[in-house]
Image: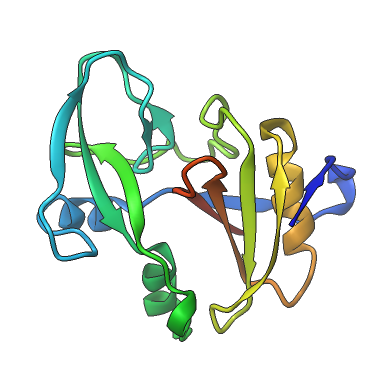
Amino acid sequence: MTTTAPPALSALPALTVRAIDPAVHRALLVRDDADRPPVRSVDESGGAPLRCCLARAGAGERIALLSYAPLRRWAAETGARPGPYEELGPVFVHDGPCQGPAAGEGWPEGFHGGQRVLRAYDRRGHILGGVVVLPEAAEAGASALLADPEVAVVHVRAVEFGCFMHEVRRA
């Protein structure tokens, strides 16, 4: 993996940024993708990255930590068979109803704090490659990966913990 600078956005495909779907979020609050109940808490100081709405939790907000398999969800929708590329990892979500990001919000401003790994997957759900980017280059990096017709979906992950942040597809 390499660290990249942002390419020119004008020549790159438009993106759709996808948080955890509200229906999936509701189901995960009962049993997560590891078949366990979520760990519920209050984010006393605020700042937990909520994958249900792609925003940071406010101080005192109720949150849940649970296991999520993003490639499994995408594969169920598309018919892909990721096999050993399927990963399960921890994510924070609201501990209760969430309508997700506002429609047409685009790239989640203020959501990304540190370096990100952008992982490109083909239509089978197999990793094609990835790049490490700074927050200000993440959107352009995802768009550059999706400019390759072999790339079907990009996952954005935190470098320091490896946690899934959100999915990116062509608009």
